[in-house]
Length: 240
Image: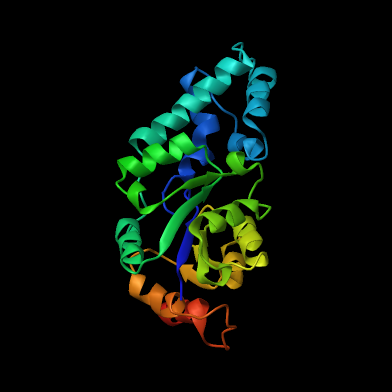
């Protein structure tokens, strides 16, 4: 029986990954420079400070790194504060979990104030008892500490706690540490099939709560499914 749920936010609960995909180009245009092709790919593995330095060295931006970083952060805050929306079906899905007594909290790599404001504006903040961030626990999602901290807070057993993630690397971390994992479909994850394969359940959309609960909510522990069972089998049926 599922008694606890740990939710990622960006790409899982909120349709917000577009921010991180386009912010580099959007900021550059806002200060009067035209970005070259594939700039966002270039920024993918850079810190914000490194990106600011790149603007200076490659585009001749004369603003200081601190001013650039504050400008980028202000644009990001604006998106979370006014524009980002939940994925379809999320409020109802959370409500159904709450009705069944499932305890819920957040585990995110995004700063807490941004997440807290977006969740409150979208009317779903009350479902969660705490927001855990990678900065707050001092570890990224390539390590299990954030999920362990969330588990201690929920007070549930690991085998009765499910982690909702849209990113393969994060889902892999949670799964390797013994959690149940629900893979949330999001086009920004390029290795979706690998993500779906390791997960205990796959959420194509949040509108099918009954299907999720039937497949996952009442399972005891992490029983291995037989061939032809489970989320991938159901997805295959839908494709026929």
